[in-house]
Length: 256
Image (cartoon, rainbow, N blue to C red; front, side, top):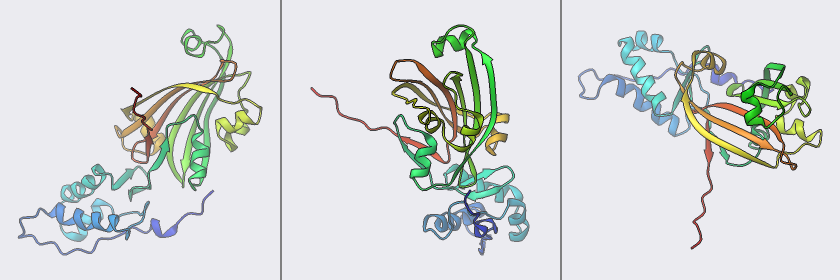
């Protein structure tokens, strides 16, 4: 687990002289210097900012004015708001190439501290719908897994997977390693996959788990993965915080 950066948990208080006679709106006089401090690196990723109530009282402005200043910075991607942790400078984006790789492995290679919280590990018999996308036998034993992936002490992704019990890693393994690393420890290797990318707004439950505001933007990924024998080894339905995560698609010009 990464050591917590105490400095980022001391709220930054903007010292600014507001010109109430200016044609520039008060909220802009607040957001612009904050924006510059973020862009020039004075305010570091994850730095906590003064909350809107404190800002409104200290600067003698209305709370809606303070809220608008902070919200416009959120909308522009410079700040992120999370329940229980306040308004912070947006973390460095996780920039990931489109490939059949493990999220946990990619994060570690990029130098991030990660941990996994297993929220659900349930054994059940395949439903008709699961038979269709897992290409398994009816009533085959499956394991439903839900994990919360943390990066640098912040929730990044809610990972939902269905795995045939014949290849499913143990609960202990999944608490320590990524899914694909756990597979590899049993000589099971993903060879190919069908993947669909999308977007949605977070539900109330999803927002609570990911410590986001309700209806915040999520990046979605559904993936069905096959081994060398063409058998499905997992079906994933993953949700990522869109403010922290993006994916790169390499494109090649078609040959004529």
